[in-house]
Length: 255
Length: 183
Image (cartoon, rainbow over all chains, first blue to last red):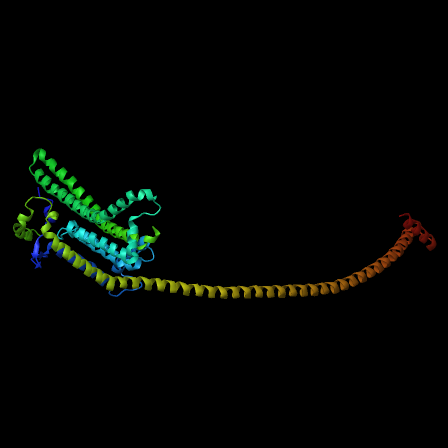
């Protein structure tokens, strides 16, 4: 049985050590860079010569842009324009990493908790910074839900604080878990195809192994389609939650 | 997966993940990934927010402006066409009214003329009819007197043949009067 976890191993490609910190270039960092380059390259090419009647690539770019622009606007409201590039960068970066990871050769950086946790912490850090920048110390009103009886506040405030602190954790784990799980399941079903097929070669009753290999192959195909959806959807969910968290601090007064 | 590089580097990293757990929890590779993730994401954000996304928004806004401009132009042209269509409709209505008036005038005129001609013809015919009636009456009277004289002559001739002598004219006249009054 192949090891389903082997695909997540991080290998050093160019060893690098800065101030005692191991910041080597690894397969994970290389594929992050490739994903970012693919995304930026796509938009550079698609909008090299934008026209009123769009080319196919321009249509796709506009579609993705509108998807996130509308999402940000529907959640954050009229101030969404200044946050849309951030939300779009998160969405595009994660979606590109996820989708590239669906192919055999690329490594999937979003299956690394280190990467998803970094993006989640960065998102929450930006939310906190924006919160203080917009509201000053009024930011702490985020933890005091309005319309709650004073007597309940000692209970509610700790709950709100915990729920806020859990946000980066859920943000990181949701993406990480989805990518990890999808890749592991695909790997296991894929290895079933091979091992059951080899078993079938033995002949006799073992010929039934071909049947099992066929079922496993069908499952792989179906799961692959599902994982493509998940790859896109998780990027969208990350973007949507970023919008929700930003909305909490941008429109704090309306809480 | 690049198996070749995997094999070469796996040996050097083997001690770090010797426990057989998930490679993601090998914290030795965290700092590099965190630092690079931040560097790459921030660069991507700068490129997207400064250069690429404004281009997309500009393209979308250019299209929206073009569409609304075209719509305004179309609306203006439609209004213009409406005005012209109204003017044309009014002209047609005027022309129809004029034509109707002309037609009814012509009809009335021709009816008057026909009536006048009919009246003269009728008068002419009536005059000729009465003339003819007068003539007919005259010739009938003429004929009646002729019939009487023929009858008298016949009576005279028959009586002469039968009796051999001509009756007196007065007697014939008397008998004829008696017969004609008996009739």
